[in-house]
Image 1 (spheres, one colour):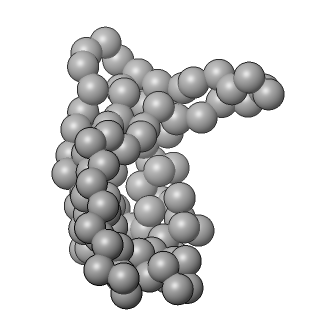
Image 2: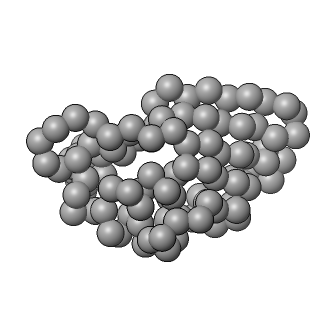
Length: 102
């Protein structure tokens, strides 16, 4: 995820970069066993909406994290801005903050 957002202007958050935040929460998030072996963290985007102006795409969604401990999913609103010509995310709002709050 950190590589996908390396060109993006990140929102301010107290826990560092996206990679730092993911490393910090790794033990708190449920793991999913992959069919080819290995595992992935149970976090995904839901309720995705895309506004396409032709020069940029604004993606709004809920970041859903399934915690390791019993209980329900944790949802946070996020916004990502994509430059479709360069195929890179140029801005994020809410994602880093949501990861830091876990």
